[in-house]
Length: 503
Image (cartoon, rainbow, N blue to C red; front, side, top):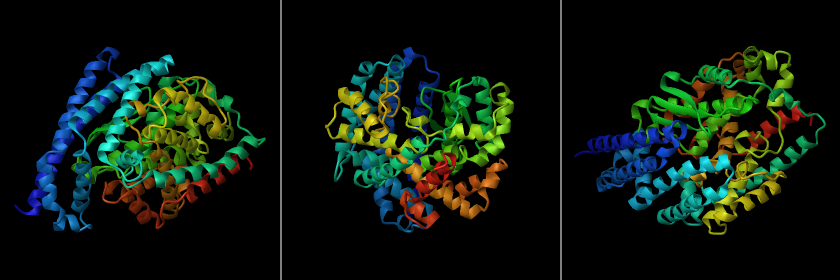
């Protein structure tokens, strides 16, 4: 059998495995949106079985044999061909998965399914004690996963690598720390400014049905294809892909504040646009998979923040918003609304944090995760540690665990090592957007006219279409000619908030 035939057999097998994974994704999405609470335990068993079956396929000896055959072939060594990246990434995944026992995989699927269900209840009831045993079990299993996968320096590296390939805590930690230190004087200057926005503008009546329609219209105008996707409501917004033409967005609304629901839609639509831009004909293969979660987050943060909170965006959309909510906004000038939308101050909730303070939320979570995995912090002590760090970095203390340690779904879902990718996403987004400005000419004018196709086409060409052909570091260098840097992000923040707050 020649290498091309072996490669085709491998791809067919992997894409069949993707059918199992996508079936699990359907169940996970429905669990977070429409599943009745009493169905939780059975759903956990369903997901556990599917995870076990998928893991068995992903670690089958035949997979190893195919990959061994292909590793030295021209298909693998010719890096100009898509097959090279497919083989490389499948080898990487196979080597990782074969280190995990099916018992551990099943236990994690079961624990995280139940953990998310209990987290939803405990968060509503502000009862961390109810959630703590489930989180403790998840952390124990994630420690076992890290030990099974192996690492050179610390456990965290084994988990971070699953979301941001090739990154390590030794690299990410100093980046987050230095970024936080650079932001401190910016945040302090904003707080000391005598020119502050009138946020009462946002504390008005914004009916949820109108918010929903407005948000969907904006996502559609950005380029999200509703023939291959939809928006639903959940406790914690997310985007998930159930198949090559089935991308689900979720959000949550506040009837007295336009920001949470609308910005979540823009954020998740950014993820969705990336998913819809991957080669659908190769679904299930690395060639149709995102580069990393940091790169994925760069897409959502670009559309939410760099586009959706920009002045050109609201030059176009504000008259439409006024027409949608005439009683709340008809008499409010655009300047006042724009300033209010971009208010910056230390706050409790990560997903609602402004650009200037957002990365401090990530630094807090990173440090807590490091301590949890290193057995330096127990789950029962987590709320106190969380509150201490919020006081240290942001000067505020959460009044409840629901607004503090239980605000994010990630730990209940077993996504330990995930949070740093949000900060990396902000850095990638700013650097990509700066390059898009150079390449597209007057990007602000295009956005101000509601013309988003040029930017989306630029992203499709430079990022989306490549799947995992390039690593994150290679992609940044290829697009911008420079390695990843905080320069573009800090320059953007200083320019924007310096103007708004007259610094």
